[in-house]
Image (tube, rainbow, N blue to C red):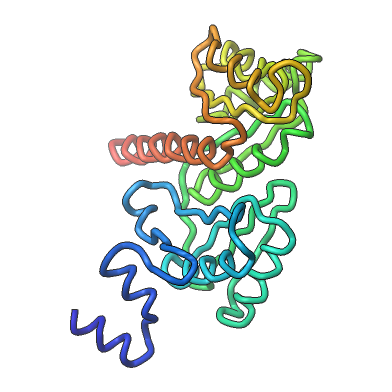
Length: 260
């Protein structure tokens, strides 16, 4: 405790870092950042930009970089991304800031951040181009958890030959996130072709009866083949679940390697 207090007094540790070390989270004017979530749960904390002002998002992102070495911001728009970039340029100019536009996700790494490495692959599959945002969100989260991410896009059931052309790649993955709108059939089809855990990600891009992802969600929940299903557009949850599976697979491979 004394060493931590002296470190704060000497300016070597920020107040936010000290608070995170003591309580597991850091508090600022925009809320509380759960800096210990990844150690506790295995899934990194993310900042949902939707519903927050750009300045609130920027403040939380800065706290995340200070306490966890990394900020992940989901559902960002140009105003959010610009505010985060300006704040980090001022407070942490060495931070590496990247925006995945099609996924609406911003990720910032401090120079000292060491990303995890997992010996496992997560496949991110989308039925069509319009599924790119939640699918991309899932890809970012699984990647930030250390998994190798392989993306397969535009293989919807309107032309099954597109899926069949990718069967070998689908079977090679250790976990699959499959995003689809409309009737949500693609995860069910793929789950009948592979022995890999499949996570269905319903997307709110359909129209007509039971639109806004409801038909896709219902179809995945009613799947005859075995799969898990997350909420509509819940790319973060799907990516996190796939990342946890990848971690378990990677850990098993390491144990097998030690026994050899």
